[in-house]
Every structure is written in structure tokens, then in C-alpha cells.
Image (cartoon, rainbow, N blue to C red; front, side, top):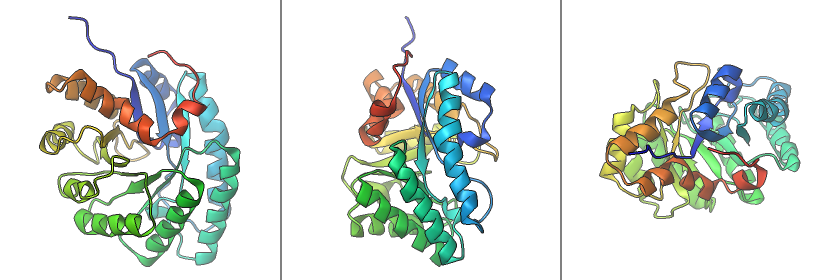
Length: 274
């Protein structure tokens, strides 16, 4: 039997930390689109640093993807672990996001969210939700390794309070999936980050088979500068198929659900063959 071919969309990767050769391999493995988010392992102390990172994303990363036939779509936000302590620095960085939105190249706001749940993270998170709401963009939201259920409850309350209609609650596991699913809307997606620091693939399959809401899941590698497997999303799609799931369900998880929430993918994309 001829193997099925799936279009694959990695809904979060920190591509600025990945090599050109890795991007080539991703394209070879059938990945057509990557949502790229900013993360460097420092707290922002200079707003100019963040402005330069945004410019890198909007210019160089998009061009780098095109050189290998990949559509790299920037999502722009201040990762909660980068959230500055100085409110003036935060507002200058937020201004950089608002200015960058004029380029029409930004597909989502984020990665934002909460990690330790500090006041500075919370203030930054709320500002990102305001920008997403006013610009009609989806939000990519980080959930932490520790206190995941408690912090996810806070995140979900804030989404409701701020009337956010489209979001990916990322890095989900069995401790918080049910919390996200209490919101019945299809466009509040569950992000399954598979890789060395996040879910292993067998647990991702277990989550789906426990809570089989086929319109709610998206996959990503969350690959960046730390321990990660840039091909983990590709491997997960193969494993989902091998687990016996119907082709149409696997295709939803591999790409269709991502296309549903990240509407800008199609308008920004080149015509790529799988």
C-alpha cells in the first residue's frame, strides 16, 4: 500500500536558533509552513534588543525559509521568560510589536503567556491580549512546566475576560488538557509540543485518544536553542498514523486545524508542493 502523504505545519518553532540545513531537511520531510516565535534565554533589559529581533524575523527569517521552499510565518510577542521587570522597557517593546504589525507579515501574537506567574509576566500577557484583540489576530500562549494546571486556569480566565476568540494554548499535557477543553470553542486550540523538553510522542497520542476532539489539536516541535528535536513534529505525524487513526483525523492534526486558526498562512504563502 502506498504511504499517505500529509501536509505538515509546525505551529511553533524558534527558527532563529535552527540551522539552514535543518530547514532544508524539514522541507524534505513535507513541512510546508512553520510559525516562528522569538525566544532568547534572557530577560529584556533593552527594548532595542527586542526591536532588532523583530526585524530579524520579518526580514531574514522569511527569506531564509524561501531559500529552501518553506513558508516561515512570524508570530511576534515577548516570551514570558523574557518579560522585562521595568514597565518602561515593556511598553517600548510593545510599541515595537504594534509598529511591526503594519508590515502585514505577522500571523499571530505570541509566544506570550505565563511561566512563573509573576506580576511582570501577567502585565505583559494582558498587553499582548489587548494587541491581539484590537488586531483580530490569534494568540500563541505558553504554559509552564511547573504548576501547569493552576496557571492554565488563570490563562483561560484571562482569555474569557478579554474576549479572545482564537488562541493556541501551547505545551499542553494530561494535567491541563481538560481545563482547556472546558472552553468548547473550536478556535481555542490545544498545542501539543512534542520533543525532548515537552511531550513524548506516545503521551501526545494518549492525550488525543483520551480526549478525541479532532478539531482542537495542533502539533509543534517547539524546537529552539535548548535540547530539542527539530523533526519531532514530523515524527509525531507518522506516529499518529501508525497508531491507527483515520487519515482525515491525522491530516486535521498535521495541518488543517492550523490553517483554521492561522488564517494568514494561505494569504502569505507561496504555492508549495508536498
